[in-house]
Image: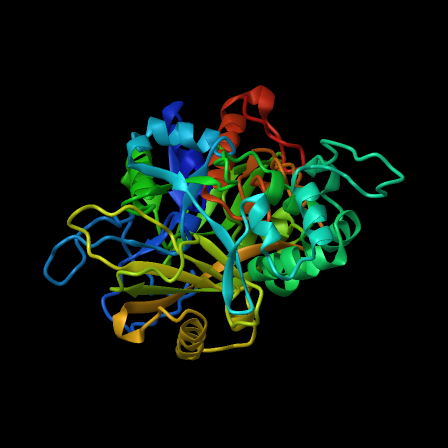
Length: 484
């Protein structure tokens, strides 16, 4: 049997591929929900239903398998549309491996594709920042700073002009994995480009840990393999029904009877330098399972000392989800980074296509970089302050249009020391001498420390291939497992 520790997207993808190849697989999820970054919750039905939850705050369930998120859950027994914890989307060609998996699962037709707009909120105005001419209208940057930013985003090293000729295709992200983003942008663009563009962007995503994000992340952000329109807008694919359809499809393919929630792996049994068993705690009972290999989609605290802790920590981001009945959107941008001072760092407004019988209105996600949890603020305080800030910055927002407000929390990985993984070859790997241990945790995912559904699925598939093909087997020694 292959034991998969963690029911995140990477764990479910690994279990799915291993089941396809004829392996007996069991998935042990320590919490009560599956999907990781693609996890969903029931749609809230009233404002002031704020319920900030940590991933482990829900009451334990004794069910041996995972209930469907698409099951009827309203008092009347009618099905409700699950609400994504955070917006989930895919891009081409960066997520091509994940998109091939979606095709296998019959989900390609569930994706709706379209261009998105990104913007910065400065001086009370939302400024689009996709097309080159939009940067010319971005007030915090001078004309020379705008030119330096455009050169950086085009991969042109123009330092030393006019004495030195510009170098084209100058930046390979993997070459800058250990270079701090701030130092890189200040040197290769300007102080203003960092302080008024990339600095706010990094702080919105990573909070005070932005200093530990490398230049590779910046280069992937501005030059990553993403299809764009001629106006510079990225093309994204969304699930119209929410990411619950993806988690549901993976669970069905693996087999619900093979997935256990509230099942904490507390011990690894070994013999002759190889793993041979797992001890799983479920409530007051413990179970021992013989295993041939273990896939780690998450690492329980009880095993960190034996497996070695990676040089990575986590911040807890707060996400306030706001549902309204308003017909007019607050903004036509998908993601707005708050350059002006605000309690939240980003406003995300997914443009998810709606079926004719779907309710009208719009949904917004407000996210910070981890400050609210670090400061110990209650969910009620967060809701009050953030809604006040939203109303003061977006005049179209009216609290009378609110359908529901709730908050959730997301674990954001942050490297201890500067590094970003571009292709899954992260030095933040665990050190262990045990054979039969395979790493599908977040530190192995492409574009670490950025959490992406496509990266998680790709990592799970890579790990499954390493398990099933002996010539590709790798211990957790930092070597990359490639998908060919």
